[in-house]
Image (cartoon, rainbow over all chains, first blue to last red; front, side):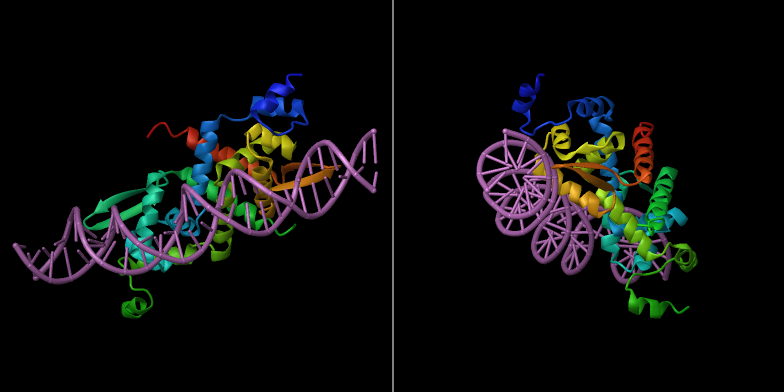
Length: 124
Length: 124
DNA sequence: TGAATATATGAGCATTTGTTCATAAATTCA
DNA sequence: TGAATTTATGAACAAATGCTCATATATTCA
């Protein structure tokens, strides 16, 4: 059953060849999976999550954000850079003040769904 | 304007007190924000994301998963532990084989939404 | 122009993370 | 019971991460 060739490539034993075949057929492409995990990686820090929650309510400048989060301007600025590189926030400059806002309405929806998930979990 | 007291607590300057007040009023509680970021943190690794995508299609055992992902059984098992601790997957034991599946249908939906986001992003 | 202010950034550092390797635990079957 | 097999786990280590500190950049205003 061609199993031996498989085992040369990958040392792990395969128990359910049919399952494996079906899943391989229907698995999403590698590239979008990496992009999705990258998106989640950026979401997955509490400072960035708090920034996103704030900007989901209103556009804010850096120093107001750092007051809100009670964090250094530098720390907030570093994280805003990460968020901007990931195209999660955008900014607009007005004089020396830089205003940040969410770049996409999807973001808020994904967060809302995640909130649903964590708050509906007191059954377990 | 009570600003000086604020500055004793937090050294950052506040430019827009009204914005800050409104955002503070409407910000979600700290606890659920941490839980959401923790959920995303777990999603935010490509190995775990691939496992989730696979289990979103079908229940699978550890060795089939490690064949699918072309990764060590140990590495997969470690990640499954992380996923189980986060209540993202559940397992069922049948003899020596342990079958894993998604613990919640929310997970698939959140991923689907994230896929939409990353694939709809060629407008730039 | 020069001081003040808002933001950005690079280096350094402690912490966290994901994998590997070796091995333990649990189960099946002869 | 003992060999084989599937999964789980602990230690170790390299890589990534998030913050701090110092400082650069950009803009305003007197």
